[in-house]
Length: 261
Ligand code: PTJ
View 1 (cartoon, rainbow, N blue to C red):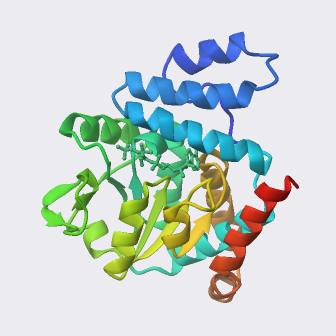
View 2: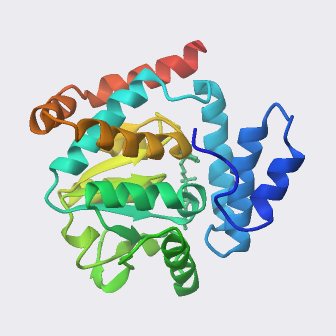
View 3: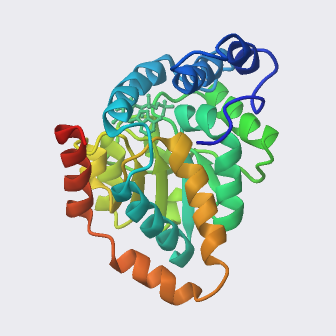
């Protein structure tokens, strides 16, 4: 997992990190702290805290580490992003609070723009998320627009950017609610999701699902891009996509949870 201190705002995570130095659940508590801080900064919705609780429970059950089924999906996801013509990385309030710098880096190495897309829509929160990403080195952050609408969605997620998600062929959605994944698939887009629950609608509806915590999956995706840019690229990318079998990856993840192994 990436370093869980020093990367966010002054005080907040750092102060808590120092006070938890010897706590056995330190990493997990620091991740929570990032989200609480995200709420205070106007980035994360209060509902995002509840969504995180769901995720935490599943993370505990998968052993809080990147498992083989996630690694297969990470390889396929990176390959799909690199092979895409118009890839886009969608960012909501939880992802922005948890992995802002890592998303900026992933955007750079895959040439996929970052687009703010949130369920609980407000212009203030879009501004706050965009500013937060810029603070971590992001540039040209795309915003949702009423000029491009996914008609089948009723939440704030229906508003997309005409130059981004609207015309993307591959959309990466780290941490998602169920409706949009299906809606994006229905209009012909490939969707890559990160979701700790392999049984969720998002996990099932996505083209590729990484059953892992975004705090581990996104840095690993960056690392993977750098690994494969060393040579044999096209062949490796095609093989990574071909090796991915959605149903079997989800079954392995669910099996790991149910068996406790
Ligand atoms: O910022 P907004 O307004 O777009 O709101 C975002 C939330 C997350 C509130 C919204 O998308 C939502 O309500 O999500 P759900 O329907 O609660 O689904 C969240 C899914 O993400 C669940 O299946 C969780 O298991 C999973 N999850 C939560 N935290 C993580 C996670 N998956 C990976 N990494 C996490 N850290």
